[in-house]
Length: 293
Image (cartoon, rainbow, N blue to C red; front, side, top):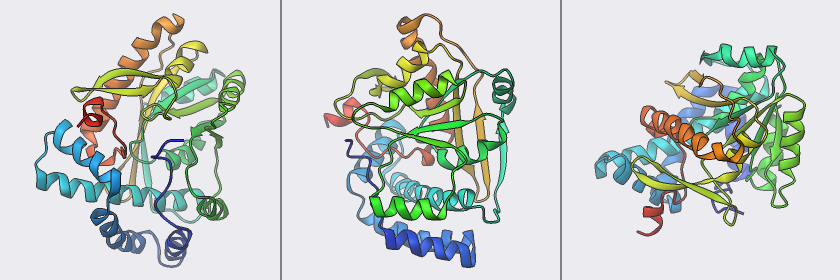
């Protein structure tokens, strides 16, 4: 399985933050996170190398600005875990939400159409999945559940999902689950910016250099001929979630439409990254140029 899948946290750390959130609230947890983030900043591993390349080579930022950005990126990731506990535990939430173009999803649900919601590791999609319960249709999120077993057990105890998780598995049985969900006219949410080593990929330029993307989501988009919507969820400030989605488009030419889907996706993704550069959690060598460096 991919090297990017496993969390570097541990159950004790998750438990400490969960207790702090429940007893003192979100913002004291954010404050403690600032200190914890320092450890990951000074011991960044592969994630730090990939972020450094992203900020310096692809965005053209200075060495000093890139260092600050790496710290902030790690902090945004930590906040996403805290936000996940709050939004998925049923506790009182300080968060507000806005949703640009939400009517597109309401219309698809009202018409009884299944849809493929394609996203990227930008912001916090699990919290967004919880917030999408306002859309009157079942939500399925396809993800690689890379947490260590004890961490996963702890998170399952303190959170309650309003969506169904389709776990990516090596035997590709998740493809059948996706098919069944779309046949039931449900929404299926999937990321298309990471791939499992050994799986088929497709190449396209992003931020001025070629990168590989998993072929699977683009095959799904053209095989089932359901509406495809690009969806993002980011934080604006400490308390506000901003969700947005593109106009639905159905690709009817089968696999001949894969380049069109990929072009639309990378265009959308480039816009999101440039608007929220600190919230793209890319922690592995993404670009072909980076791998050869």
